[in-house]
Amino acid sequence: MNRYIIDTHIFLWLLFDPEKIDKSKLETLQNPKNKVYTTSISFWEISLKYGLGKLELNGIGPEALPEKAQKMGVDILEIDAATMSSFYKLPKVEVHKDPFDRIIIWKCINDNLTLVSQDRKFPEYEKLGLKFI
Image 1 (cartoon, rainbow, N blue to C red):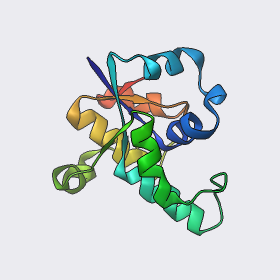
Image 2: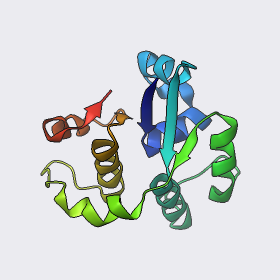
Image 3: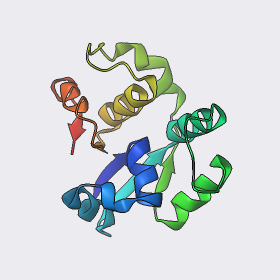
Image 4: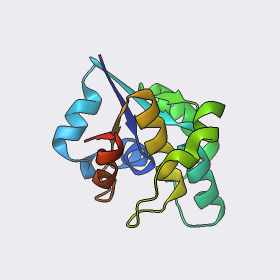
């Protein structure tokens, strides 16, 4: 079984706009032989942006999203204390500074998970051990 973490925008697209996801990535995520996760950090990012008025969720609030994830078959992976406390070890990448993405990337590297995203800056982390599609 392959294990994948989806980043925040892929999670939201799966929920509201799956047609925005690259077809091969969508097939990977929908394959029942694969295990798909989102992270607790993504829920924090969504809640923060929603509270600031920078994100609309099609008439639902952020607190409804964990249940929506589970109904889609997407498990929630908590970011543990070991990952958080060792985060400083992830080298800085000049083209990418988003702290939400970076903690997800660090989790993927540490737990040998593959990150699914359409962010064009993420391949910069492959030389640091990130598996990315």
